[in-house]
Length: 160
Image (cartoon, rainbow, N blue to C red; front, side, top):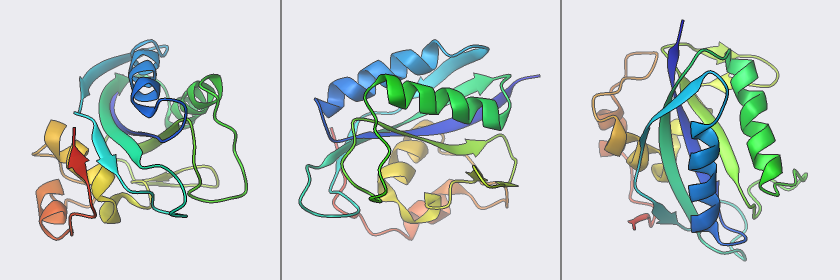
């Protein structure tokens, strides 16, 4: 059985546009997974410390037979392959950040994973590319993505 999932991609170090392109290829090559759609690239100011470069963000839709935790493990492996070093600092600069945003219509809350992603409703840099590739999408609680986007402030996001 396969499930549709949405992955948020972000980078602001070591040629971020290239990091995102390499990550899209890596997603397409995950085991038991097919890359279905990819959004445009978006540029956004950093969420955390402002003494870092802007981020390049995108969203991918995949179809996978992996479990949510297996998919998370695969995403973290891709991050590590692309030079991601996990630090205690939250929202610091990074070569690649892959967030599992949605996994089918499941709501998951465990030690390693929260789905829908805990920041999904507040982050224009995720919601705008998500809306671009899935305008009819509804969150597991039935909330249409369009209604969330309508309530957002733009947050300095630029479509590239």
